[in-house]
View 1: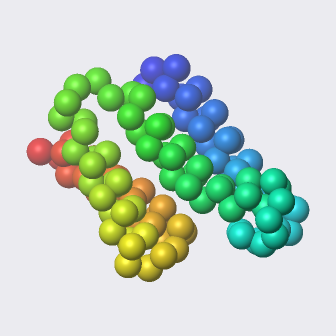
View 2: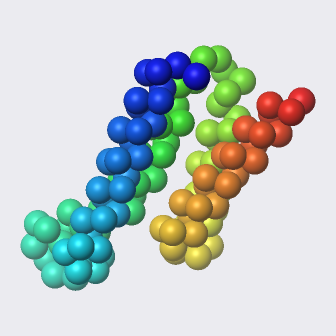
Length: 107
């Protein structure tokens, strides 16, 4: 594995953790209040999903690696519409991405 990809993965992981830790530490719920901090905290779910999409597109070397991304994003969208849960959508998208990647690697 390239050292650059490892550094990128660590940076994305740290940013994702900060986006999730901040609201928990500040004891703020999504959508409470109308201030700038409340709007910022309510955007952490979509920001986490966007972080995962960016992290999965940067290391693409060829067009055949697009299928896991499409499956992951598709799972996120379907699960979000079905359950309206950022957590379920994010986990489902990550699972779909991993399973598609594994299936493509084993063929």
